[in-house]
Each structure stands twice: as C-alpha cells, then as structure tokens.
Amino acid sequence: MTDKARARKLADRIQVVVAETLDRRIKDPRLGFVTITDARVTGDLREATVFYTVYGDDEARAASAAALESAKGVLRSEVGRQTGVRHTPSLTFVADALPDNARTIEDLLDKARAKDAEVRQVSTGKTYAGEADPYRKPESEDEAEADDADDEGETAE
Image 1: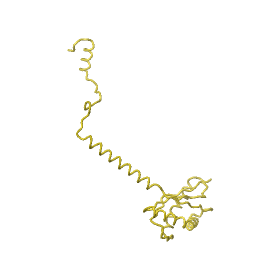
Image 2: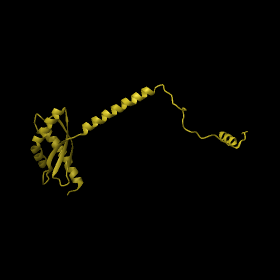
Image 3: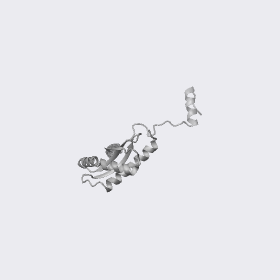
Image 4: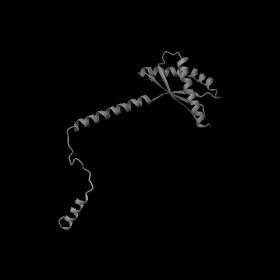
C-alpha cells in the first residue's frame, strides 16, 4: 500500500492527462462536450476511476460514454507515458451525478420559495391571535410592590 498523498497526486495527474488527451488526440464524433470532474486512484495504484459530465441530453451522454469506453486504451497508454509509474492503472469512467444532484436541489429550493411566497401572501393583513408581544416582561418595582400588597390584603400607597 502506498500513502494517500501519492495516490491523490497520481489521481490529479490522471485527471489532467485524460482531459488534455480527450481535447487533443481523441477525434471520435460521438464524444460530446465532456468535462473531467474528478479522478480517484485505489491505494495500490492499480485502478483509477475517472468521473466526467456531459453537456447535453441522454442521447449525448450515452454516445459520449461509448466513445470514452472505445478510447480507454489510448487514454491508458497516454496516462502511462506521462505519469511514469511502474504499473499503469486501469481506467474506469463513471458519469458524475453532481449536476443531477444540483438540479434536484435547485428544484427543491424553488418549491420552498413558492411555498414561502404563498404563506407570505396568505398572512398579509392578518393579526396575531394573542397580544402583539407574547413574551413576559420583568415587572417594575412599583408593580411588584402593588402585587405584594394585594396578596397581603393591604392596599399599596
């Protein structure tokens, strides 16, 4: 096992090499607007997982995934040539779920904003059921003496 710092450095280098190679050498027409978002390497430096996103619809994503799988050999040989490690890690491409998660969160936030606006609209012009200030205030000394006198049956002067 190697240390985590070396694995992270190798993963960062693999991310850069794969992105540059896709940009410069891979001329597959199926490859759309692909962005390499992250790369992770196992502790033994034998396997690398490369995360990517594709701009476009589901058809563009499927075509880009097929293009990445077909270009895997070229990409792996380029990674081996530029990193200089003894054993070149095998590459696995995984579609990054981050844009989908971000879209879901944005939809939920939009729903919450709509509900807040609805509550604000319903509450416009309404009044509180109780007093305007429902919190107890500390009594002043004069009121406290008057309450003490009432409790003993005497009147306060």
